[in-house]
Image (cartoon, rainbow, N blue to C red; front, top):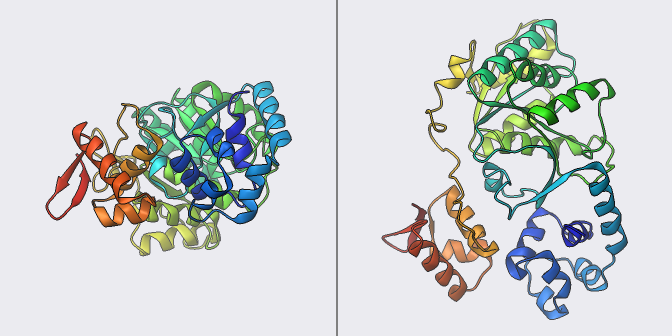
Amino acid sequence: MDHFYWHALKAIPHVGNVTFRRLIERFSSPENVFRASEEELASVRGLHPDAASSIRNRDCQAEAEKECRAVAGAGVDIISFLSPQYPKALLQIHDHPPYLYVKGTLRDEERAIAIVGSRRASAYGMTTAERFARELAAHGIAVVSGMARGIDAASHIGALKVDGRSIGVLGCGIDVIYPKENARLFSGITGKGALLSEFPMGTEPRPENFPRRNRIISGISMGVLVVEASENSGSLITAQHALEQGREVFAVPGNINYGTCRGSNRLIKQGAKLVERVEDILEEFHQDGPVGRPPVPIPKITLSPREAAIYTLLAADQLHIDDIILKSALTVGEVSAILLRLELNGLISQLPGKYFVVS
């Protein structure tokens, strides 16, 4: 069954996104992870002993088989981080999901802006979000949001009104429609964009899922526009993720008498760019990408998991070879050989003092 071993490994307790990636970097594929010896598994940094035992015993086989059947029955695509279809910008966040559940279509190197805000937005907030989404989509920029009530829904609707692309990132399984009133919106987005989730099929929309979803909303976007956010809004979590990921943060000024505007107004006081028109966002970006720290595109040639891991490290910043060895958890010989291959392929360059940078 397609992606059986990916589902099986993801279902192992104590195997989070970072540990999952380390296992793939060490053994090249999930199938090889399940074939590894006890000693080989013990060599993987951060792997919990209970997780190693579960892997050896294949404890999650039945769960993986069930997941494969659910995926096939729902017509969902599984896009792993080794696939060329995986959003390239998302590879740059430290705990990117090992794979995504996808309905609809993803586009290579898609330029996207996230729009987020209050679920209990005012009429002003709703019309403003829809207007910005409509105008961004008209400029060929995909609008990303979280499929919730309020600002999220208005943003998706605005993009679809001009036949633009919109991407919905879910805090539940991709086969779960939440909230129910957005059923038509779910259908519209899969026809003109994509729905994404990192959660297994059938996962209910639990509160703890949404902060995790927010890092993906910002991670696949060039920047985040906050429209009407209260002081404890989850939208501020998305803005914080954006800052940590090197993305731009924008905010629409709101009525000082509205509690739903205090968070977004505070973002402006803290340095987010105040925007009144779509040009305020567009001027921050070149024709081909954002100003400042743009996501470095992953090359279209095929890389091994270890090569991709080191290339991704260098995409974020230039690094000394000692730091690459430390961050990758590979041996000196392995890192040296990979750096040489990447350099010979013209993907990276060596700077004086044993520093390396993406070409």
